[in-house]
Length: 355
Image 1 (cartoon, rainbow, N blue to C red):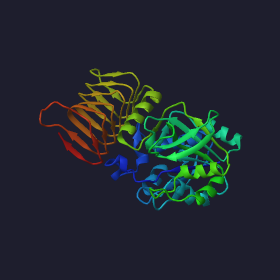
Image 2: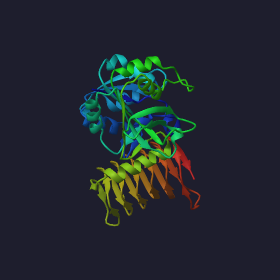
Image 3: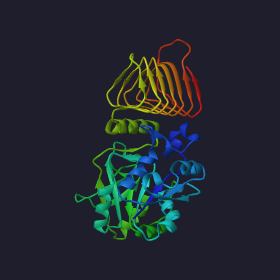
Image 4: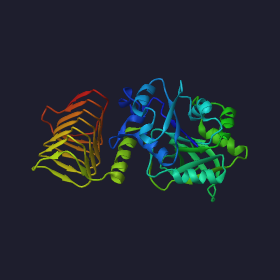
């Protein structure tokens, strides 16, 4: 079985951050989202992965992932010239996939579990497709499935105006080679894309076996700022362990599950976990946390930062309260007018914000 990871797309919903980078490489708990995907595939026993990339961000993805050796994978890159839908990505990848069954995994999705059990169930079932489902509050924003009491899929609808259920398709799919016939039979949707939901529906309409599993753990599509912050919270809450590798002075407190990198310094400050702090970070006269991740090389002085993602080499100074914020690489956030406010910001890379 092969893996197919979709890491193209333009990341419009995460702008301005994704004007300068791939959305799949935005960090959650100081690790790119895409790295969690590759780790999950490796732990499920996948060795060969095709990586769908776009002309805009493909070079950045290649630089970050390389040949996949860090995960025990062999990664090959497949260029999708235009973002014409998930089923179109399968069409483009057909020469790489051949007749092998495969897992298709969206590179900006995070789930709170492994996928090995779903792989085993799919292989044992002899089905042509298996989908993961999760209850959502806004089904009109997702591909939605209707299933019977035995969990068999009845029909699928992409972003329905009148939802048929609240079961959204998680961005992880298992397919046999039969899916290649399906993607050649469907037509573009009103959005101008070849929808994977239409391809799976073709399998259903032609009496192919399609299974479903309800995901018990959390699932997060990190395509928007609030979703990214929620993902950061979930990962920090579930997976952060206390590990202090930097220096904490006698006037500071580090409370709870705080993972602190080498070369970092905490001076006259309080850090309350769960928090992840990268390497060579300087925190002075500040309060950090909970549910905050701070990238390598950041400088935070005389500030309060909570429930935020701060990317590498950012500087935050004299901010009374920064919360629910996403701060890009190399940005400067500074307050100089003496006013006392709480701020919620989304700031792109290498930006300057004076408050």
